[in-house]
Amino acid sequence: MNRIKWINIAAIIAGSAIIAFGINYFNLANGLAEGGITGLALLLKYVLGWNPAWTNLLINIPLILIGWKMLGRISFIYTVVGMLSVSLFLWLFESFSMPLPDPLLASLYAGGIVGLGFGIVFRFEGMTEGTDIIARLMQKHYGIGIAKTILALDFVILLLSLIYLDLTRAMYTLVAIIVGARVIDFVLEGASGARAAFIITAQPDLTANAIMTELNRGITFLEGRGGYTGKHREVIYCIVSRKEIIKLKTLVHRVDSSAFVTFSDVREVVGNGFAKQE
Image 1 (cartoon, rainbow, N blue to C red):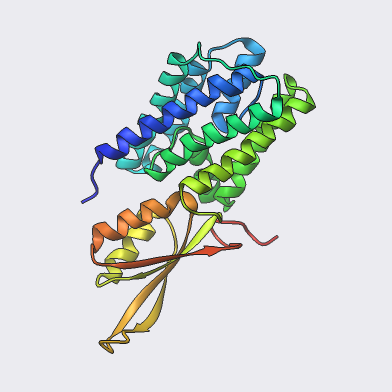
Image 2 (cartoon, helix red, strand yellow):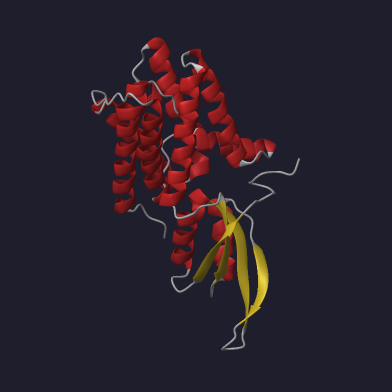
Protein backbone atom coordinates (compact mmCIF):
# COMPACT_ATOMS: atom_id res chain seq x y z
CA MET A 1 0.00 0.00 0.00
CA ASN A 2 1.28 3.46 -0.93
CA ARG A 3 1.98 5.44 2.25
CA ILE A 4 3.48 8.73 3.26
CA LYS A 5 7.20 8.33 3.94
CA TRP A 6 8.61 10.64 6.57
CA ILE A 7 12.06 10.52 5.02
CA ASN A 8 10.48 11.97 1.86
CA ILE A 9 8.84 14.71 3.91
CA ALA A 10 12.14 15.54 5.62
CA ALA A 11 14.05 15.57 2.31
CA ILE A 12 11.43 17.77 0.62
CA ILE A 13 11.66 20.25 3.51
CA ALA A 14 15.47 20.21 3.32
CA GLY A 15 15.41 20.69 -0.45
CA SER A 16 12.92 23.54 -0.10
CA ALA A 17 15.18 25.22 2.44
CA ILE A 18 18.10 25.03 -0.01
CA ILE A 19 15.93 26.51 -2.78
CA ALA A 20 14.82 29.41 -0.60
CA PHE A 21 18.36 30.04 0.64
CA GLY A 22 19.70 30.19 -2.92
CA ILE A 23 16.90 32.48 -4.07
CA ASN A 24 17.52 34.97 -1.25
CA TYR A 25 21.30 34.66 -0.99
CA PHE A 26 22.13 34.82 -4.70
CA ASN A 27 19.12 35.59 -6.95
CA LEU A 28 17.58 38.46 -5.02
CA ALA A 29 20.93 39.77 -3.79
CA ASN A 30 22.24 40.04 -7.36
CA GLY A 31 19.09 41.09 -9.20
CA LEU A 32 18.55 37.76 -10.98
CA ALA A 33 15.20 36.30 -11.95
CA GLU A 34 14.17 32.62 -11.96
CA GLY A 35 11.88 30.27 -13.87
CA GLY A 36 8.49 28.96 -12.82
CA ILE A 37 6.19 30.42 -10.18
CA THR A 38 9.23 31.37 -8.09
CA GLY A 39 10.41 33.55 -10.97
CA LEU A 40 7.02 35.26 -11.10
CA ALA A 41 7.22 35.92 -7.35
CA LEU A 42 10.67 37.47 -7.80
CA LEU A 43 9.39 39.68 -10.60
CA LEU A 44 6.60 40.97 -8.34
CA LYS A 45 9.25 41.65 -5.68
CA TYR A 46 11.36 43.69 -8.10
CA VAL A 47 8.48 45.65 -9.64
CA LEU A 48 6.01 46.07 -6.78
CA GLY A 49 8.11 45.27 -3.71
CA TRP A 50 5.87 42.37 -2.69
CA ASN A 51 7.35 39.74 -0.41
CA PRO A 52 8.06 36.60 -2.53
CA ALA A 53 7.30 34.36 0.43
CA TRP A 54 3.65 35.46 0.30
CA THR A 55 3.24 35.86 -3.46
CA ASN A 56 4.76 32.41 -4.06
CA LEU A 57 2.20 30.95 -1.67
CA LEU A 58 -0.79 32.88 -3.03
CA ILE A 59 -0.05 32.04 -6.67
CA ASN A 60 0.53 28.35 -5.99
CA ILE A 61 -2.51 27.66 -3.78
CA PRO A 62 -5.17 27.89 -6.54
CA LEU A 63 -3.01 25.88 -8.96
CA ILE A 64 -2.52 23.07 -6.48
CA LEU A 65 -6.22 23.05 -5.54
CA ILE A 66 -7.11 22.79 -9.24
CA GLY A 67 -4.79 19.84 -9.72
CA TRP A 68 -5.21 17.97 -6.46
CA LYS A 69 -7.27 15.15 -8.02
CA MET A 70 -4.64 14.71 -10.71
CA LEU A 71 -1.83 14.48 -8.17
CA GLY A 72 -3.30 11.79 -5.95
CA ARG A 73 -3.34 11.88 -2.15
CA ILE A 74 0.35 11.18 -1.51
CA SER A 75 1.69 13.48 -4.24
CA PHE A 76 -0.74 16.18 -3.13
CA ILE A 77 0.58 16.01 0.45
CA TYR A 78 4.21 16.09 -0.74
CA THR A 79 3.44 19.05 -3.01
CA VAL A 80 1.74 21.00 -0.23
CA VAL A 81 4.71 20.32 2.07
CA GLY A 82 7.12 21.58 -0.60
CA MET A 83 5.07 24.66 -1.42
CA LEU A 84 4.61 25.68 2.22
CA SER A 85 8.26 24.96 3.03
CA VAL A 86 9.61 27.13 0.21
CA SER A 87 7.40 30.05 1.25
CA LEU A 88 8.32 29.61 4.93
CA PHE A 89 12.06 29.52 4.25
CA LEU A 90 11.84 32.45 1.82
CA TRP A 91 10.47 34.40 4.77
CA LEU A 92 13.00 33.03 7.30
CA PHE A 93 15.97 33.65 4.99
CA GLU A 94 14.89 37.04 3.63
CA SER A 95 17.76 38.81 5.47
CA PHE A 96 20.35 36.48 3.90
CA SER A 97 22.12 38.24 1.07
CA MET A 98 25.42 37.98 -0.77
CA PRO A 99 25.91 40.58 -3.55
CA LEU A 100 28.77 39.57 -5.81
CA PRO A 101 30.83 41.89 -8.05
CA ASP A 102 30.83 39.30 -10.85
CA PRO A 103 27.27 38.61 -12.16
CA LEU A 104 28.44 35.46 -13.95
CA LEU A 105 29.69 34.02 -10.68
CA ALA A 106 26.40 34.97 -9.03
CA SER A 107 24.42 33.17 -11.76
CA LEU A 108 26.55 30.04 -11.40
CA TYR A 109 26.08 29.99 -7.63
CA ALA A 110 22.35 30.68 -7.98
CA GLY A 111 21.83 27.93 -10.54
CA GLY A 112 23.91 25.43 -8.59
CA ILE A 113 22.28 25.99 -5.19
CA VAL A 114 18.69 26.32 -6.42
CA GLY A 115 19.14 23.37 -8.79
CA LEU A 116 20.45 21.26 -5.91
CA GLY A 117 17.35 22.07 -3.88
CA PHE A 118 14.96 21.23 -6.71
CA GLY A 119 16.87 18.02 -7.43
CA ILE A 120 16.43 16.85 -3.83
CA VAL A 121 12.73 17.70 -3.87
CA PHE A 122 12.16 15.87 -7.18
CA ARG A 123 14.23 12.87 -6.07
CA PHE A 124 11.92 12.36 -3.10
CA GLU A 125 8.74 12.64 -5.21
CA GLY A 126 7.89 16.21 -4.28
CA MET A 127 7.07 19.44 -6.09
CA THR A 128 7.24 23.01 -4.84
CA GLU A 129 4.98 24.87 -7.28
CA GLY A 130 2.10 24.56 -9.70
CA THR A 131 3.89 24.68 -13.04
CA ASP A 132 3.86 20.87 -13.24
CA ILE A 133 0.11 20.93 -12.68
CA ILE A 134 -0.38 23.43 -15.51
CA ALA A 135 1.78 21.20 -17.71
CA ARG A 136 -0.27 18.12 -16.87
CA LEU A 137 -3.53 19.95 -17.60
CA MET A 138 -2.19 21.10 -20.96
CA GLN A 139 -1.20 17.54 -21.76
CA LYS A 140 -4.59 16.15 -20.74
CA HIS A 141 -6.76 18.67 -22.59
CA TYR A 142 -4.58 19.74 -25.51
CA GLY A 143 -2.03 16.94 -25.92
CA ILE A 144 0.94 19.27 -25.36
CA GLY A 145 4.01 17.59 -23.87
CA ILE A 146 4.81 18.27 -20.20
CA ALA A 147 8.43 19.25 -20.83
CA LYS A 148 7.41 21.58 -23.66
CA THR A 149 4.84 23.37 -21.45
CA ILE A 150 7.29 23.84 -18.55
CA LEU A 151 9.94 25.19 -20.93
CA ALA A 152 7.39 27.58 -22.47
CA LEU A 153 6.29 28.83 -19.05
CA ASP A 154 9.89 29.46 -17.98
CA PHE A 155 10.51 31.33 -21.24
CA VAL A 156 7.38 33.50 -20.80
CA ILE A 157 8.34 34.37 -17.21
CA LEU A 158 11.87 35.21 -18.32
CA LEU A 159 10.43 37.52 -21.00
CA LEU A 160 8.17 39.16 -18.41
CA SER A 161 11.25 39.71 -16.26
CA LEU A 162 12.52 42.12 -18.91
CA ILE A 163 10.02 44.57 -17.42
CA TYR A 164 12.58 45.01 -14.66
CA LEU A 165 15.78 43.33 -15.83
CA ASP A 166 18.07 44.62 -18.55
CA LEU A 167 19.19 42.20 -21.26
CA THR A 168 22.47 41.50 -19.45
CA ARG A 169 20.75 40.42 -16.22
CA ALA A 170 18.23 38.40 -18.22
CA MET A 171 21.06 36.55 -19.93
CA TYR A 172 22.74 35.80 -16.59
CA THR A 173 19.35 34.54 -15.34
CA LEU A 174 19.21 32.21 -18.33
CA VAL A 175 22.68 30.94 -17.39
CA ALA A 176 21.44 30.26 -13.85
CA ILE A 177 18.39 28.35 -15.16
CA ILE A 178 20.53 26.21 -17.48
CA VAL A 179 23.04 25.44 -14.71
CA GLY A 180 20.17 24.62 -12.36
CA ALA A 181 18.68 22.19 -14.88
CA ARG A 182 21.99 20.35 -15.22
CA VAL A 183 22.38 20.12 -11.43
CA ILE A 184 18.87 18.68 -11.18
CA ASP A 185 19.87 16.05 -13.75
CA PHE A 186 22.96 15.21 -11.72
CA VAL A 187 21.03 14.84 -8.45
CA LEU A 188 18.47 12.61 -10.12
CA GLU A 189 21.29 10.57 -11.72
CA GLY A 190 19.90 11.11 -15.17
CA ALA A 191 21.65 13.16 -17.83
CA SER A 192 18.85 12.89 -20.39
CA GLY A 193 15.30 14.22 -20.20
CA ALA A 194 13.81 10.71 -20.29
CA ARG A 195 14.68 7.13 -19.49
CA ALA A 196 13.59 3.86 -21.03
CA ALA A 197 12.66 1.29 -18.38
CA PHE A 198 12.62 -2.50 -18.79
CA ILE A 199 10.78 -4.25 -15.97
CA ILE A 200 10.84 -8.02 -15.39
CA THR A 201 8.30 -8.92 -12.75
CA ALA A 202 6.16 -11.82 -11.60
CA GLN A 203 3.21 -9.41 -11.47
CA PRO A 204 3.20 -7.85 -14.96
CA ASP A 205 -0.50 -6.98 -15.08
CA LEU A 206 -0.59 -5.36 -11.63
CA THR A 207 2.65 -3.47 -12.33
CA ALA A 208 1.47 -2.26 -15.75
CA ASN A 209 -1.86 -1.09 -14.32
CA ALA A 210 -0.10 0.82 -11.53
CA ILE A 211 2.20 2.55 -14.04
CA MET A 212 -0.69 3.56 -16.28
CA THR A 213 -2.95 4.80 -13.48
CA GLU A 214 -0.43 6.41 -11.11
CA LEU A 215 2.16 7.75 -13.56
CA ASN A 216 -0.19 8.16 -16.52
CA ARG A 217 2.42 6.54 -18.77
CA GLY A 218 1.77 4.03 -21.52
CA ILE A 219 3.45 0.64 -21.43
CA THR A 220 4.30 -2.08 -23.95
CA PHE A 221 4.51 -5.78 -23.21
CA LEU A 222 7.48 -7.58 -24.77
CA GLU A 223 7.79 -11.34 -24.99
CA GLY A 224 10.78 -12.65 -23.07
CA ARG A 225 12.20 -16.05 -22.13
CA GLY A 226 14.42 -16.78 -19.17
CA GLY A 227 17.87 -17.98 -20.21
CA TYR A 228 18.21 -20.25 -17.18
CA THR A 229 14.63 -21.43 -16.60
CA GLY A 230 13.47 -21.30 -20.22
CA LYS A 231 10.12 -19.93 -19.02
CA HIS A 232 8.27 -17.35 -21.08
CA ARG A 233 7.62 -14.07 -19.32
CA GLU A 234 6.19 -10.69 -20.26
CA VAL A 235 8.64 -7.77 -20.01
CA ILE A 236 7.25 -4.27 -19.46
CA TYR A 237 8.77 -1.46 -21.50
CA CYS A 238 7.95 2.20 -20.81
CA ILE A 239 9.39 5.69 -21.09
CA VAL A 240 9.38 8.08 -18.12
CA SER A 241 10.64 11.61 -17.52
CA ARG A 242 13.58 12.21 -15.21
CA LYS A 243 11.24 13.39 -12.44
CA GLU A 244 9.37 10.08 -12.57
CA ILE A 245 12.36 7.72 -12.25
CA ILE A 246 12.21 7.53 -8.44
CA LYS A 247 8.41 7.24 -8.50
CA LEU A 248 8.63 4.33 -10.95
CA LYS A 249 11.21 2.52 -8.81
CA THR A 250 9.03 2.97 -5.71
CA LEU A 251 5.89 1.87 -7.54
CA VAL A 252 7.44 -1.29 -9.00
CA HIS A 253 9.02 -2.27 -5.68
CA ARG A 254 5.66 -1.78 -3.95
CA VAL A 255 3.92 -4.19 -6.33
CA ASP A 256 6.76 -6.73 -6.57
CA SER A 257 9.77 -6.33 -4.30
CA SER A 258 11.73 -8.93 -6.31
CA ALA A 259 11.17 -7.23 -9.68
CA PHE A 260 14.19 -6.55 -11.90
CA VAL A 261 14.31 -3.00 -13.36
CA THR A 262 16.86 -1.47 -15.72
CA PHE A 263 17.03 2.06 -17.10
CA SER A 264 18.74 3.39 -20.21
CA ASP A 265 19.24 6.91 -21.50
CA VAL A 266 16.92 8.12 -24.23
CA ARG A 267 18.33 10.77 -26.54
CA GLU A 268 14.97 11.95 -27.88
CA VAL A 269 11.34 11.01 -27.27
CA VAL A 270 8.53 11.86 -29.69
CA GLY A 271 5.01 10.93 -28.71
CA ASN A 272 2.19 11.39 -26.23
CA GLY A 273 3.42 12.88 -22.95
CA PHE A 274 6.69 14.05 -24.48
CA ALA A 275 7.62 16.13 -27.52
CA LYS A 276 5.36 15.76 -30.53
CA GLN A 277 6.55 15.53 -34.09
CA GLU A 278 5.74 18.80 -35.85
